[in-house]
Length: 266
Image 1 (cartoon, rainbow, N blue to C red):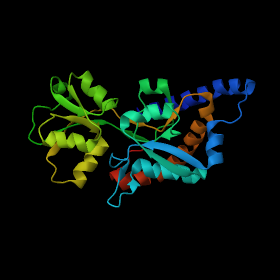
Image 2 (cartoon, rainbow, N blue to C red):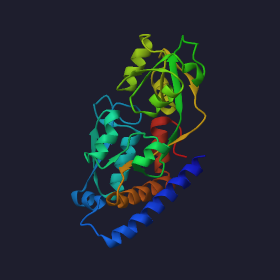
Image 3 (cartoon, one colour):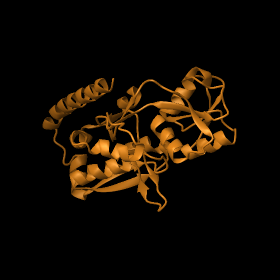
Image 4 (cartoon, rainbow, N blue to C red):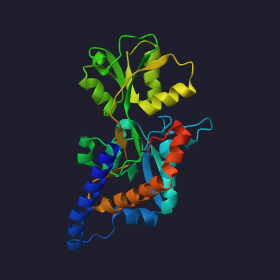
């Protein structure tokens, strides 16, 4: 499945480059986005900063995490400074469209609907969805059991969409920490989130009174997100080239082991 996703993304990018390349030859523009970024020496990266272990602040209030390290390594290889633009999840896609950032690197799942709206790089990680409940809640054991029960999730997230599709009653939240608080206070029956996220949370919080009630059996590709448009194709190609090199030399695996204690990049 993962190889199929990777092949599909590679074909989509190759096709887009070919189509837009013809247009570019006929109507050359002054500077594409990659030219502008390289001239400035800085890559503006949208990320949440509140979603451990993907992107969060440590005890010293330093921005860190899997996506942060991936972003820094991409920039290092391109000779760029990373400029992290922290924002709520629901603002990330609109921020890209408004050109407030150059790329989003925030554990974003490359769904079919999103790929119609944005360019996605090749996957740099894979993750699946987990249902999280209080430890004493035995009424939710499968995704079907979400029907008629409350589920706290971020608006516009795949977790929100999945919960809704199974008939859950949505409670909107801004962060994973907020969802856990609602669960512990018995103000929500469940939350859906990244399986990698919840397992990291349980390792770092061994006395947590929450549990994984169910896990989806499909891995989704995680990729960096760029705006659509001819002027963004060279950036997309450069990101893909860099991520491919990071896959090949084991850098992505090393970063994954640091934050997840397992390799989620293959």
